[in-house]
Image (cartoon, rainbow, N blue to C red; front, side, top):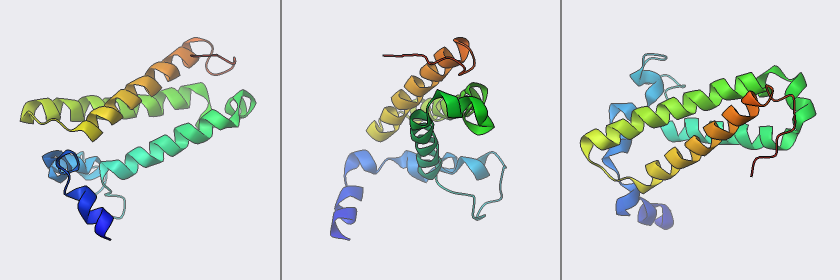
Length: 133
């Protein structure tokens, strides 16, 4: 319990961004009502996205071709949603003139994942094994 209190008192983790209405994008965009069980913080959505990306990476190309959720087009759509949210939230950081190291890190990660997804899709919709370094 002490370590959690100590971590949340760190200035980089105490960003005002986390308390903004945009901090729960599902309700902010009206996809679910406020207080709904799916009205989760953006961090939870990010963890779900990163777990999806991690699982997809280790499934291999054969499974990606035969599973709709993990094929190249689905991955490009999901990565584009994450990239769109990064752009939206990055703009919000710019408007409020806030430096959030955690936020910037996730924007860089999301950009990298989006670029890799685009390259894979451009190489053949995930049907070819693409070595991206």
